[in-house]
Length: 325
Image 1 (cartoon, rainbow, N blue to C red):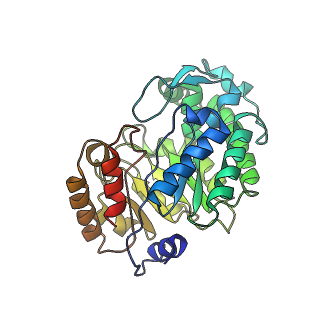
Image 2 (spheres, rainbow, N blue to C red):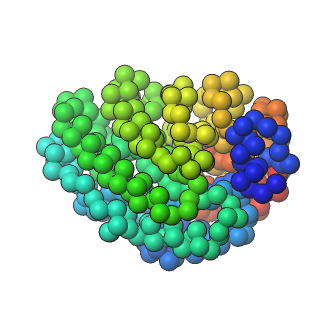
Image 3 (tube, rainbow, N blue to C red):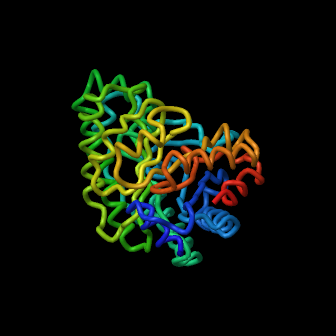
């Protein structure tokens, strides 16, 4: 089987020649230039031959042209620190304007994807990271401000979320010209640790549905990422265009065994990015991988971490993930 066949059979719950596997990471510094990010992603894939390629730009790529500024200050996950927000008071949400996906940071990502697709061809499906409007709004204003505006000035926040959603839809429309297999849709607020389910169904879910409902039919490999502790996992079944769910299954509920009863597609996980891949050993990774396969009865599993792997993870551990399958 090639990677596409392996993933398609996994999503369908059918037997495969082996369990598919993939890891992804940030490339701080390299992610400031299209050619450098493309080269890093290409080299990472050619080294380990993952079953899919998840392109991971800085989280600011979709909002930088609203006026946000950030910088990598050494975070081991490769994420940047936000130095300037575009929204500092609730009225600022009404000043946001839709962005042109062909220009600025969004245009740079299209250039990056073009180079990656040209270099890797059909050797493995390629998916692009798309942050949910609420996750983008958090980075536009800061997490505490977002929750305060959500509860005190909801109409103004909805105005901003509509603009962010429209920009995201325009970017997805531009992505149709690139031969990717789908998107990695990152949701950060569908978590009981962050807000109530009613709040998420008011400020998150309607915008998520607007975006996911427009994904092209030919995008057959769309991954939903539920970030954080205590995820609202049951909403995954409400997204009909999503074939795979990824979450921190090693650190929070549901477990893989519980998740397979709640979602009909494939589950992506089984390893802790921190405890296994960053701080563990090849032996602990092999043991965790065997346990994950057992939880899923050998089907519907894509072996991976719960999120990005730290950029300082031992190469022997990364190799161990690939060798485990």
